[in-house]
Image (cartoon, rainbow, N blue to C red; front, side):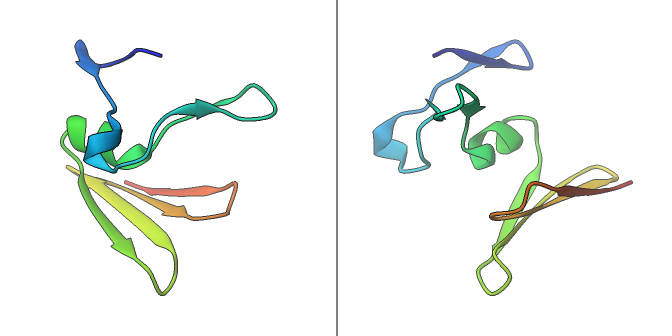
Length: 75
């Protein structure tokens, strides 16, 4: 699988230990978000107590709660 972000190829390798893209049982593509978000200049934080990933880029904050189907986006 090849991914392009901001006209640059985004490569995932096992050596980075950031996870690998895959297709799930419903043929949906799943990608680890940290690398993709950092590629576009977002700052990433993870709170293990709440299992929440927070990505901040400019005036936009995205909160991803692990296991949830809902994202929170604040502008």
